[in-house]
Structure formats: C-alpha cells, structure tokens
Image 1 (tube, helix red, strand yellow):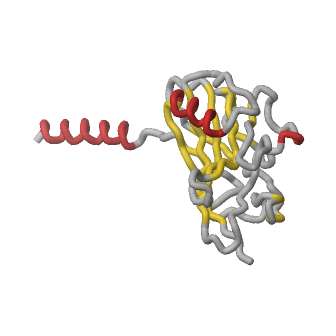
Image 2 (cartoon, one colour; image 1 turned 90 degrees about the horizontal axis):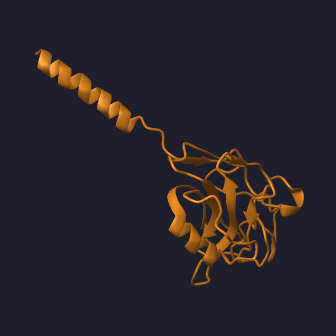
Length: 184
C-alpha cells in the first residue's frame, strides 16, 4: 500500500510540473475574436481608425534574446496572403506594446524597435481591409521569441525577408487569431 501511495504522490508531482508549466502566451486588451473599425485600415476603400491593438505576452522560453510581432491575413486574394504589421528587434525586457504602437508618428515604442514595410507599402501597422463581400478573413497576430538580439534588418526590409530571418531565429511563438469582414 505504501508503495502505491508513494508512486501516486510522485505521479501527481510529475503531472503538476509538466502540466502546470506556464506557456508562452500572447493576449490583447483591445482585440477579441473579431476585429472592429478601431483596428480597420483607413484607405483602400476602408474607413477605420487603423489603430494597432494593445498586445502583451508572458512566459517567454529560456534563451529568448528579443521578440518580433507580425500580423498576417492568409485569406487575402493575392496568392501569398497579406502582411499587415511587421515589428522586430523588440528588447527581451519588453513584454507589451500599447494601443497605437503601430503608428510610428506616435513614438509609443522605444526607438530600437523596428517596424518594417507592410504589403500596403508603408511602415507600421496597416489594419484589416478585406475586399467587400469577400467573407471573413482571419488575421493572425504572432509574437516570436527569438534567439538573437537583433535581426540585422531595416524598416525597408520586405515582409518575406523578415519572415525568413524569423524562421531561422524562432525559439517559440504565440498567436491570437481575429476575424474581420467588409460588407457593401
């Protein structure tokens, strides 16, 4: 009986240490399962506020030296999706971007953080703006825990090249998926 009790206690301790581990998690106070006109792009026929959502993350894995964030729409009718936001060289001690951080003119983030060009052809956040009556599009916002402090890229680096560097330097990633559609 003592042996069974001993093994039961050990099993519970091991389960708790494995199952109770905190995972790398991304969250937002502004964004839920559906984007709103607050996040919607202002241009290309859209009339939203183009305000990037607040983002925060917890429990980065050991070895993380910096972070990056992307926002991607795989449903865009382009054959390659649409990159809405590309941010990298986020210092390891940064665990949040405030609402509106995607607007470089507002200077809401430290100057060493780089916001790169998007598929809109501009630097910074460009919100959802799917074609009218094209149905729901998913917008995947991902934070990457990276094994390097700097990617060595600039604000004019294309999203595809940034993605290649992210792929080569990612330790872990966490995402939020939000949906948006435009009707006539």
